[in-house]
Image 1 (cartoon, rainbow, N blue to C red):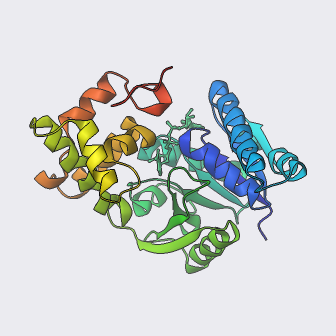
Image 2: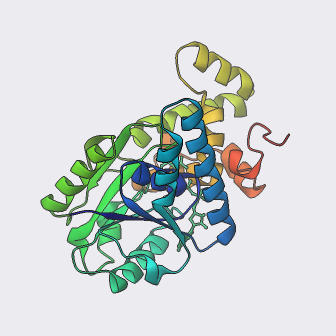
Amino acid sequence: MITTIGVIGAGTMGSGIAQVAAQGGFDTLLLDINDDMLQKAKAGIQKNLQFLLDKQKITAAEKEIIFNRIRFINDIKDCIAEVIIEAIVEKPEAKIDLFNKLAQVNNNTTIFASNTSSLSISSIQSGIPCPARVVGMHFFNPAPLMKLVEVVQGDQTSDEVTQTIYALCKQLHKTPVLCKDAPGFIVNRVARHYYLEAMKLVEQGNASFENVDAIMEASGFKMGPFKLMDLIGMDVNLAVSQSVYEAFNKEERFKPSPLQIDKVAKNELGKKTGKGFYDYKN
Ligand code: NAI
């Protein structure tokens, strides 16, 4: 039975996933190596819960209970749970190293889920002694609002683990979709061109990024590609572009854009740094 969910990485995704877990009634551990990120996550979750209270979606008592279900931690030895979801940097070696460390302190039934946007679950699990218990659990941004979760079964993930995670998504009031471990899974493969073609238009001087966003939003998309990239984080989006490009043997249509490479080089990562394509500093 799952009573405790561990979430590693308290950034954009991890803080949202921890909120989802706590709202779903689970004892939740949120771990980060950076104390500033933990503080930021604490404040962000409080703000989100206050918003729900203001909208009368939860009561003041529920807000307290949900928040108190989350323990903010910085020592891996304290991260003992039945399911651990990692949302750290999009680098396979970092994720493999983390899961190996977690496997040493957890028992032999703990499930290790990766929130990776684009890395192969099969290649992550091949670096871990318990590959059958490694699975993809890809939430969307912002995690507390977006219903979809791609559940990705790697070559060695057991059916039982996949089904447990699928059922857990439902308990978390999400809509799980089973996916093959193919590059970009489903959404990031299709959405790659939403970003890449938009950046090509701007690179070639055919439109401003503001106009591209305005037109896409006027035609029914909730967010234009540039606003969406700022929300996702330029570093994360570039890492996904690079990973899908590599996985498709450098097919030209998936080639990362010089615009996004330049933004990352300037540390203009979007909302999280106060500047991306747009400015977020007041
Ligand atoms: P982020 O940069 O906002 O946060 C990453 C956090 O991980 C940072 O707080 C960092 O201090 C922490 N961290 C790094 N290494 C760590 C370690 N070894 N142990 C503990 N904490 C560590 O990144 P974001 O955007 O939350 O992305 C995280 C993962 O989620 C990536 O794999 C990304 O591809 C995926 N993802 C991102 C989405 C987005 O829209 N940003 C959407 C869906 C998935």
